[in-house]
Length: 359
Image (cartoon, rainbow, N blue to C red; front, side, top):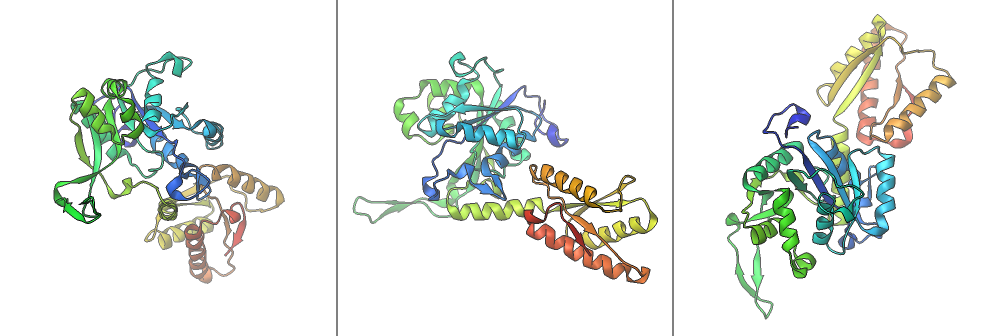
């Protein structure tokens, strides 16, 4: 397995790579009774998007999701509902570091697993509420960790960091250009981060926040810092959920598949739709010999059932019946159909899935 192999890239062999996703937060800053990792975004829990981001990368062999004891059943139902694979649920601790440590123990301590999992060479640590991580940055931190022992994504500071004096007045400010914000993902040689956690004090486990610092403090491993992209941000407050929903909705709406029949006139409709839509979104044009245009109740029922099934994978299926009598009116009719398709894509209304719409 190689970082990059999931999308055709190449990199030095790393066998295997595992990911640990701490997902035990209570969501206090979100101000919601539901922990943020389980809040629905476009009808799907946020944590499911993050798991999917890891799952689609072939060279990540195992995904460990660490949740609080009261949310284990919730996480199990999410894995089952959305068909997640290569995922193992681990009971978390009372703090973030204790949860991460528990996630690592399944590779090294029998009491934390029925059978020890294959110990990875490199382990990725990534927050369950950072759903927009891409393979490129994961590959970069993994390869850097293999070379340096530890690596983490960073971003430029947006605001200047200041320190206040005991009286609440300004003491001093930091030169922003010299500092960076530490982000996720981070990656470590497994032996490095596991040894660091084994040596941690209770104070480290209860009040520490930075995994890279533990590797430096206890294993003298100086992490390589990798410039990250703007989409590594963490869902923390309620407004972040709205932003996440907007991004997910936009990402999901970048492609449409238009399937047409083999008959010449129908194929022409598909071609015209492709031409109308391709300037706005990516269009896949397919041709089928098995489509029946004698739309009856049985056919509609089959379409609705199929639409419900694929909705689990965030694919929304709509039926569009394009009718025209005069060939001269074809372009006008297709133009109306294209406008309807764009409206469906923009709105992503789940109530209309499986319905037959007419243009």
